[in-house]
Image 1 (cartoon, rainbow, N blue to C red):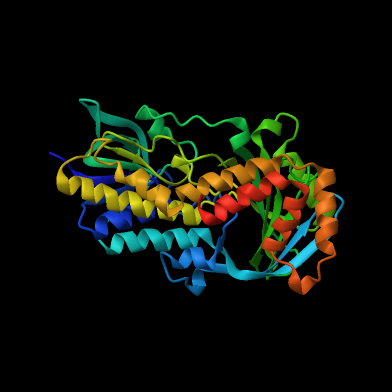
Image 2: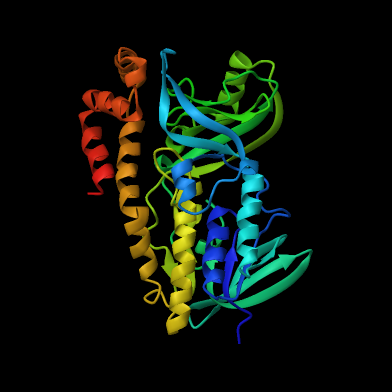
Length: 390
């Protein structure tokens, strides 16, 4: 006997999409979230493209803190490159957005329980058949035909199931972000700072949040984190650039910029979103890719249940569809990310100088990558592979 067809662990965008996808196809589904609220605390820069979002939902005004139309980048020597974005983007109110996604799942029948801390799996005959969890100090168990782990970069559920989730230092970034008030910035522009003075091996960002607010954060590649502290680097930046800023929230954590895990399924279990390493390796963004992964996971889970085969073999469609939907491109983006991390500050300054000579109205991300490719020819092959899906 089972309590549910599908148990989803984690109430972020990947988890909510998995719950929605499974429940909308008739699966008796429950989503367990360890925190007291869906969407809180926010561990995200909250930026997303309009095109990416519309693949799954129609954007609503209450989700959006700022609409992005311009991009500005600063090199290590502070050469400024700015241009209009050809693609509309948003900085979200993630707490409101995540609530909406979870509510959407509930509208098609998914149950949701918060303060549910999953601390074990029920395994019988080498098949995951449910979870053990704590709720308000009480130990509970639930059985299901499939467990979908959408529990973030820590991916405890994956480890419990015996899936190798270890990540190399150069494939993770140490991230630290603050949301600040009392600053005057262009609310239609996102700022990026690159170079070892700002964020060694990563980048620093300033994302507007409306009403004189912004998310300001940075990520330092793990292999350099021993010598550079994300917290100290960011506070140094704030002191120099926004000394009047009032800190409203702060958050830290790891950002996986790795290949998708080789194994994202097991007998009775699937990993999705950050837990499966589906984050965009170049940008560090995981909202859209996580929603992709969650949607596919929910669909395949229901199909496997329908034919009565929830073994790893029976779930084999999941990694195949992920690869087709974005995983193949993900591999090329990882190669680009690796190449970008090797660019020195001197090379970044030369690239910025070349781009600054391009008339502003002709600047674009593609033009910048073209200049980068002249400085680092290997990147040209990686970019080509990314955009043609080779």
